[in-house]
Amino acid sequence: MSISTTPPPENGTSNRWPAWFRKEQQEAWELFQFLPQPKRNDEPWRFANLKAIDLSEFHAAAPSQDAAALVARSSAHTDLAAKLVFANEVLVHNDQVGLPAGVLLLPMEEAAKNHEELFRKSFMTSDVRLGSKKFAALHHAHLHSGAFVYVPQGVVIEKPIEIWHWVEGENATIFPHTLIVLAEGASATVIDHFVSSRDERSLAIAVNDLTLGTNAKLHYVGVQEWSDKATAFHINTTEVEKEGVSTALQMNLGGAYIRGESDSHLLGEESRSVMLSINPASGTREIDQRTFQDHFAPRATSDLLYHNALADSSRTIFAGLIKVEEAAHETDAYQKVRNLMLSDEAEANSMPGLEILADNVRCTHGATSGELNEDELFYMMARGIPPKQAAQLIVRGFFGTVLERLENEPLHEHLGEILDRKLGF
Image (cartoon, rainbow, N blue to C red; front, side, top):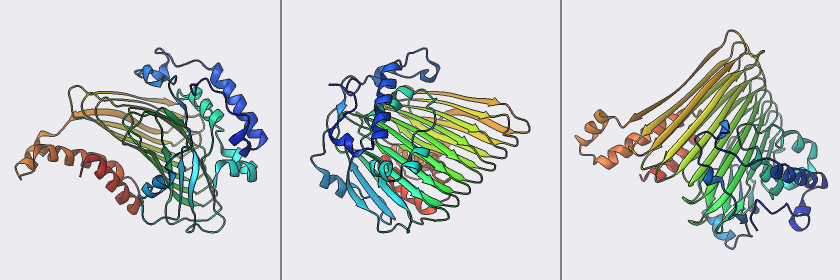
């Protein structure tokens, strides 16, 4: 049976969850069935390829047949505080030797049982308002496991936490989830890896909830390396309290169709949200990203920078809104999308927007599209660099300006190495 016609299980693995959560899953399933499939005239799906979100051929993922090999392949960063590896939503590796005392790094079902109040306060509490509410409900209904991270007040984790989500199996579906809660003054870096074990068609509906208390600081990175046949949704909600700083980067390095939604809530005075995205698109890949920078409190800052490099007949879509609520005076908000067009057949659609309900604010938004700089190409070719390599270097520099926005220098360098491998260096 298709994943879209199969209700959440009432027995077996679902019993790992507490009764209240299983009730929520049944309610989420009913919501999924009630909500209509997106239509072409729905504004949140403007320009989208709706054929790509047909879920009829996808089914629930079976247990991985090669979990040990996937653990062995889950090695990117070499100096970590902790690492979790999930294979088809089953935790197959758990290393936490570098975590400070008091930090919780748990499978989500264990957190729901043993830390119910903390879990329920932050798990999917915000409305999904950028178009994928139906698919978020399906995620909630079928969630099997995921990673729960809690950093208590004042605790600083110096090294990154790395989480791997593997999918294995033709037409297999997984529902990765990462829930991160930072208490007042806490600090952490979390790297989520989303990877296909083989070149197979698959579906992933991934959700992450990022909750930052007063003066908390989070670097969150999603490194998406699904197969070139995969369909994936990545749905994010970020909530930042007073003087908190969230820096979130999404690297979309794979997939046939990727739908990304990022909704950032600036809840406290002088809070800050930095939203970054790197998107090399080639072949017939489609990357569809929708964002919301919502300011609720005075003197908060949001800063969005998305870079797309489009080759062959690839497509990108960006629709982003900056909203300044009535009480959010002295807001600073920025939104910039840059498209580097590497082919006459590629297509970039950009729709930035503003809605300002407060006084004394500074908000700017814009989108640009351009081709490779001929002077830069000529300069490198005159020094013996072949045209193809020269073009790669320009693309690498184009994405490098996004990585430079990361204040964490070791993280910047590590992600640069991943990007270099993708670009063929």
